[in-house]
Each structure stands twice: as structure tokens, then as C-alpha cells.
Image (cartoon, rainbow, N blue to C red; front, side, top):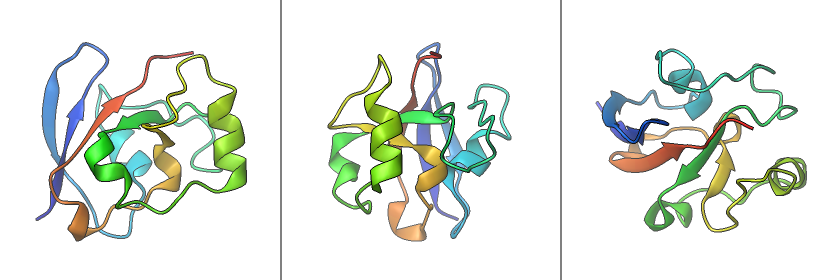
Length: 105
């Protein structure tokens, strides 16, 4: 199965299994060191903010305007790495992708 490398807020890297066709947020909220995902994937809270390794950003679809607007309001926004994990579907082609859970805001 395809997986991803996730750096938690303490800086520890974990290997986790991804599920094709499921948002990265859904996988991350199932682990204790994952994301809060308060809105449940409705792109309205930004509690699933992650930093995608720049080497993988080009493989992802561009953020939609509502996602970009939410991200730009965050103190920890990084134009080259920030995404809402609820808006990124994991696919087998993303096997090995590395991401970091952004700080709480």
C-alpha cells in the first residue's frame, strides 16, 4: 500500500498508510498526533493545515480560491508549502509524500 511520511508538531516523523481517494485530513485525524479537523472537511476552519514538502507540491492540484483565502489568513501560512489537508485527496501516485502538521493557531 502507498503511504506518506508525516512530521508531527513535536518534530517526530511517522510513516502512515494512505488511502486512495480519501482526503489526507481523514487519515491524519485518526492518529493521536494528527490534526483537529474541526469542520470535518468543509474547508471552513483551517484546523487541518499542513506543510507539504515542496518536491510534492507540483503533483497536487492547485488550491481552490476558498482554500487559498483561508490559508492566507493564517499566521503560519507558507505560500510554497501550505495546504488544507481536507482539500487534498491521497492517491497511490503520492506514495512517499512528506508533509508536516502546521502549528495550532
